[in-house]
Amino acid sequence: MTTTLTFPGVRLHPVRDPVRGERARLNVVVLSTYPPRQCGIGVFAADLCKSLDDVAPDLDVSVCAVDHEGLRYDREVAWVLDQRDPAAYRRTAADLAAAGADAVLIQHEFGIYGGRDGALIASFAAELSAAGVPYLVTLHTVPAAPTRGQADVLRRLCRGAAAVTVLSPTARRLAGAAGIGAGWCETIAHGVPEALHQPARGPSQASVRPELARILRELAHRTVLSTFGLLSPDKGLDTAIAAVADLARDLPDLCYVIAGATHPEIVRRYGESYRDNLGKLVAELDAADHVRFLDSFLTSTELAQLLAHTTVFLTPYRSRDQVSSGALAYALAAGRPVVSTSFFYTEDMLAGGAGLLAEPGDAGAYAAALRRMLTEPGRLARAERAAEAAGTGLLWPVVAHRVAEVIRTAVGRKRPERLPIPYQR
Image (tube, rainbow, N blue to C red):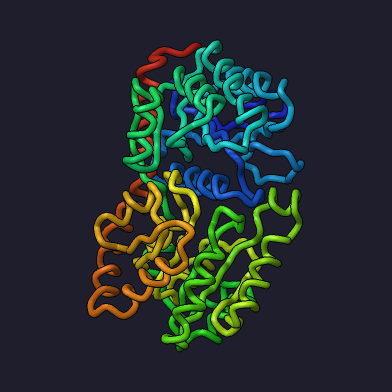
């Protein structure tokens, strides 16, 4: 029999055995953006929560959603933190402590918390520490050369953390060099839904939106290149478009599918000017037959279908400092070879031979790398095998087991004994 703990404005799952009065499960709260907000961190958090529910029955997971739009959420979201309200950070942290949270997992990315460089998250963490609630931090970005403000925020956030996790070996090295997470820093890969692993072509197209199904039908007998994710100038899509236009003179069956809505912040500031400029570039390069745009935020099922039809996945990002990429992790889990610009995450993830690298912003070098992948004898098959090998360790059940172990250990280190949590029949 289960009973819900009730607190004003908060919904929690049971954390005590109603018969014996013993603590039955650890009450874990994930702080993050969350669907329906269109955000890669939100997708990560939703997949993490579902996977923890599947593999860790001793953890009772709920969500505190970081919001600025007044979105409506599903029942797993028990709190909403207004990222623009400075007072909300300490107040929400106090609410979590009062509700009996055993641990809070903070998903950190610059730009999703309020204040200069997202500094308000530090006050949230300080309030948790004052209340004796251990928190863990997942760093989705670790700048190689952080600004003074960024470095200050990361140190203030991480110095009181029971554990810090990062998504790649390079991110751990950078964190250590900056004195971040020196007490306990773990590398845990970016998880990927199992649906992405060796996705099947064909019948499941019925479960994708009509626009994607039409594109996949049209390109069934062509060599498909793809990129997906929220569109913004730092994705370097102009580099890939120019490279594809150049290469298509010799390989006319190439078609590059760019799937993704424009990033909401880009739309808010500049409208659709970035997407429009990409369209103009395609026209200028006379590449309309070789580039398709799909203006949609795709589901995992739809991404699985797109990747099943993809020959090579492209990540032409501009910044060398990127230490994670959910899109790249998805491509590897699907066994797709990659041609990418060189940045920290690709250097880590493609070291086993799953892809080729080119200098950021250099369309000629990018075209040369793509040509090698597509035409060099045996290159594509070797990259596929390496991608499949790398992708197996990225599946969410594998990743969630590791996250659960870190949570259990962190709670044990920081607070072996807890006061009783109010229980209501």
